[in-house]
Every structure is written in C-alpha cells, then in structure tokens.
Image (cartoon, rainbow, N blue to C red; front, side, top):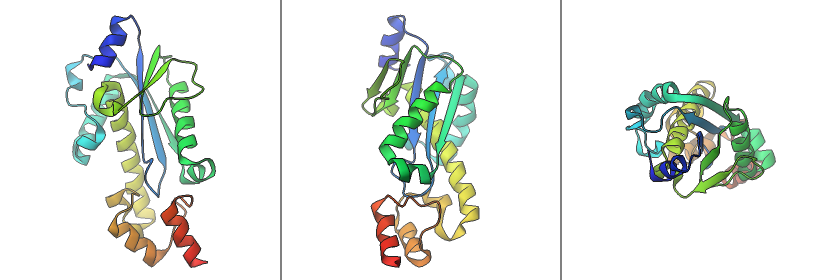
Length: 204
C-alpha cells in the first residue's frame, strides 16, 4: 500500500477507487478507462503491481487476472475513436472516468486518479501527480486499462493488417506513419489528431 492510500485509510476513509486510462495519446483505436476497488490494499499479491508503462506486455498480461481476483469491483469503459473525435480527447477522458466510477458495484468513499480530477463526480476525488507510480489502486487500474486496450488493438490488427496495430497499438511510430502514407487512414484512426488530419487533407 502506498502512502496516500494509507493516509486515507488511517483517516477512516474507504473503500478507495483507483482510475486510469490507456490510449489518450494514440492516434488510432479507442480510449480505455478502468476504475476498480481492491479488497485489501496490503495484500501481498499486489507487490508486483506497478505503473503499466514499467511492465512488459507479457508481465501485464500475467498480472491482469491476479488484479481482477484481488478486486471487489472493476468497471471498464471503452470510448471509440469516433467519440474521441466528436468530443475531444480530454472531455471524452473525463466523461469516461465518471462513467467508470459510476459503473462500479460498490460506491467508493474516495477516488484517486492519475493526473486529472473528475469534474462533476459527487464522490470526493483527487488527481495525483504520477498517480500510477504512487498509488497501488491507480497502478492496478492502469494495468487493467492497458491490457484491455492492447487486446482490442491486437484484434483490430486482424481486421486492418496493413497498419501494424498489434505492434504500435495505435501510437505514432515510424512504421505506423509509413503505413498511413501508403494506405491512408481507416475508420479506427482519430481524425481530430493533427497527423491524421494532415493526411486526410493531403488526400483531398
């Protein structure tokens, strides 16, 4: 258990929900937000839980089911690329976090998020700087969100094999850019992102 969560529990505040997203900076694929409440923040089974970016893809997959088993409630919200385009990535993310918390089976006493406060949420919540590194609830949520999104992107790669989604997961890489120049954009690309908008403009 991290310091911030220990302080909340010492103050008699529980249960604590953690919320995090995956795919905010990607130019293709959905935005995925996970909210969860862990049964016991001091459970030894959580010792391997870290910020999802610090773990390999295989390690995240291994820990995914373990986190689900140690959680009393989990809710995952998937925001498609078209909604990200229509609402803007920040608005879509904040709304997705609200929906993720509201969809939990338990009502949390407090919500911790990574970087962004959840406006309009009735439950007290705190945006924690680098939260996925300093709060185990947020770290666990980051892994759930990341693994869920990676699985979606691998499935998307089967449907749109020309783009290499299984490798770069929709983020901009040299290989992704090359595939975009060669094949143009597909329905899963976020047209509101500058690199995608530039390609569309060039095709017109």
